[in-house]
Image (tube, rainbow, N blue to C red; front, side):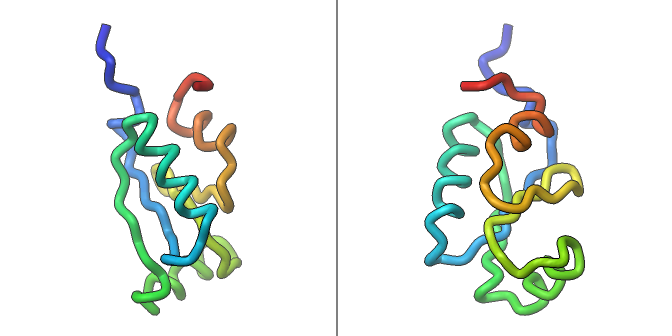
Length: 88
């Protein structure tokens, strides 16, 4: 049995800003579960910020996009469900 989580097969984007404490928690949680992700700092990338609003209808962060499905805020239960992770 592999020690790697099934999440390694998912495409995960984390839309963040440097001053967002919930963004830090979300990234820390993903790292603790061994989930690779790409971070997008919307404070430095106006196009990404516009794209985020288009996708979610909101400007707030964090938004964790898992296989094209946005999770607004740090919703651990929804993140686990979309990644197929068991509760830690």
